Length: 527
Image (cartoon, rainbow, N blue to C red; front, side):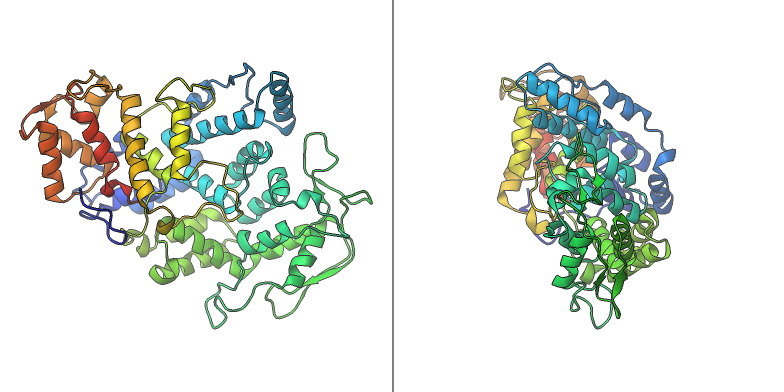
């Protein structure tokens, strides 16, 4: 195989259809490939229709995926039942009490079940862009399982607003118990406010540290001062969970700690004149969120991050016009996420962006499973340490690749740039992961000179077939574009033992290693 080049993908460029499925979705499934046709056919894909279909996710029938989620076992290792992902805070607290009484680890169980449902939805859901945006906002509004409240937040904040309105999203996040704990605002008293959340709200969630509005002040003019941070922290003091039975949000307008700071305030926020906040309570915080959501730098910062997710690691240099288009759509629609996304995804730079993005471990894991045609997800809830290809094994593999969901500690969220994921550890780890998936789902091969029959593996290659046809089928499934002829020949010779017309089926000893090699190849790492 060609070595992993950090700047140029090996092989030919993909069709627009394949690019769209790799960026807007978590990669194509076999049924998607059947619809889009061979990777040589590019003329019949309507990107506008595809984007509009995915944006209108409510109209997509996802009942099969939801039925699968509903049928997943929620029995934890202690024999208690994890609540569904749409559970109330009270229901989650009831579970935690029951599991602790059974000598369990309720927060770990909640996290593992949320892994399972998140992975299952990305694997099986037809609402792929929605799932991509859930992942995007999960990182943009980063919290983690330092408390059980993350379990509640995933459904009630992120999923509720993933393709809604930005102001509604940050409003829900500001009142999310998980966010209040993660950035310590739940302890913020007006007389001595904690500035963590106020700072990250401005720096990471909305405007950015410096102006992103094009012009002479671009990335030079600060969007806020230290005085602004302190005043914003006072405004948000009293936004807490303290004193509630299940860590629900409440506004504490009384005198007990942590109380709100009522007096009037002013903030600069990079404006020509100060924003004045009259004497008041929770309405001060709502006013602050209104101002931040409507701030022009917020429009450009959100558009920049979306362009970085969907088009290029370097939007400022590769696609500044796409950033502008997204920002203008954000401003015109008053923060409508769908309108903003549509402007970005239909910008010409999206279609011209091949070679700009690589797969992070999450995307590699799911896209490999989708290419395999799998219809079941590993349930990470049970303890199965004795199973060499069980949930605990895959948990360890995911952790070694560096993207264990809901655990990242920094408020920035996980990086979405190539340099963070492009290293020798990823090369070996992804090869190990791909081969483990092949052996778990296509029958474990324990001998080098024999292999078990497996109907799913035969279906993957349309076998029995020839070594040449099998390799071409695997290239279509996992890569979706022409690879270097020498690499293709090497794969065929390996699989067919130097006979390109050799008959290949799931019992062919070299087939499973070939699947793993193609799935983990440099060609398959680009998004």
